[in-house]
Amino acid sequence: MEIESKEKGALSYEYIRGLVEGEGCFTFTTTKRKMSNGTIEKFKIPAFAIAMHERDQELLHIMRDTLGLKNRVYNYKSFNKDGYKHGRRAFLIVREFGQLKNIIVPFFYKRLKGNKGKQFEQWLENIGNDPAVPETFKFIYKIYRAGFYDRNPRFQ
Image (cartoon, rainbow, N blue to C red; front, side, top):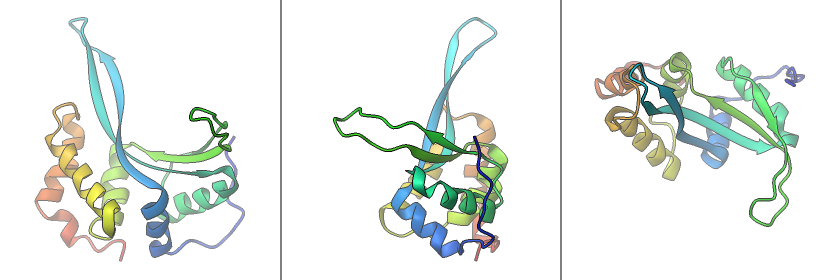
């Protein structure tokens, strides 16, 4: 069940980047598709994700709304996989091509410090160079390499 944002104020862009430095991830999700010849092929879809304890679910809603993302914030049950009881998690994941290209990449491009900045750049390189990534998503890599995001001051 999705909760509407109760707080009216938007978050600053720097605050959001700080949250992502600590809790965010630039990754890939794997999906399978049956091809016309009957074979099953795996694809890797680029994704941005951030997960927090459910008590911060409202914060993820405000972050999503500030960035203009259309995704739901999911709430997953607790787990005990590693011997520790973890609380419920609120989770925001963005996999849609348009939102990655027009919101996520320009928002974080050259604005993350430390390891998360390196992870972000490696993620962009992997989008362009991994043969399991669909051609559609490789467009993000191509415009990144062409300097498009250097000229895009949308999220200053």
